[in-house]
Image (tube, rainbow, N blue to C red):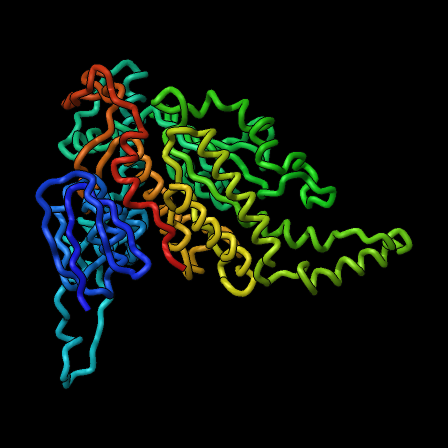
Length: 500
């Protein structure tokens, strides 16, 4: 059966009890009708709901419908698409994520080896993808940052020495300055655990800089400051979503566990440091919680105190505890119980609401949870928490930082059983982080092309100050740092939980 759908610039759709489509027009004007099969009712209804005030006449709906087509090309997030991680063996900093949709890989003709019938056994090479595919992949932002920071470091060194023998910028260096000028004076906050902290550590070390712990020491605050850019990434440690500190907490130096308490006593005193160009909040915030929660759930059962425990000797108590590590909810390698899942859901929902209120107007990304190097049954609880967090993020209008899924199965790239190591995966994290910061501050990138740069407060490489042949960039008299407006341009198309 086929149904007829009429669309206009502003349509409001609803499905009746008989699942027949009816539409009430918000405005009465020229309409047009298209025919679609019943099997694709939902994608089309979602498409019409999504485009809102966008012109329906710009949409082409045919007998076969790709839900990806509903997103404007410039808003297609390359890291939310299925793709391929191309690791450059000569220079791993040039590792690239190649999204299948944006690079039109699905349209590549079949190679001769794949044709049937065949009289030759297929043979294969290990060469890189074609240059046109690599060029249409997302920008290798971190590679450019390394080159840019080295350049301004050398320029600053000459400037401080009196300005003799200034660096004469080549054409490629001029392009580099133009490409990276926006990154000065930025602030970002990453709320999470040691997986995130180590990525920030690698980010800093690859620029020959040293990250620093805050005054509270380990498991409190941590930062990577890039002095010549006046740009800083802050890490605020989330010690699970438990609402209090149990007396059995495994790290004695952690006195505060609840995120509410940690904000009040540890993070809020640093608030003035994390304010970005908008003068009110950071330019970007990533957040997650999961690995510490998984440990806390196990420890909670292992350390239950029964009324009869006072009759037991210390050795008997320890034996009882050891037994709980192997049975019931105290064991490792199990799903969360329903009670645990509902507890986590409630706390994560409050955490997300808290962050949205605290960082009001700041672009937010939930960082999907990583699994262990050798993923197995021990990751079930983490996967449970990631799935419910994804559902909450979608329901609360928060996008997802999908780096964790890009790391799956690259066990040879891990630092240890839990943490991702320095190399292709950490460069991918850095590229993704800078991609979202670029977008959050007003940039537009599509298919490897930089269509629009964020506003900058000034030129940071200047003629005669340690450099010559500098092209002065056009800077607005009153730069626009309204990051909410910039982020929202594509935000509605990228709020989805990601599947599985």
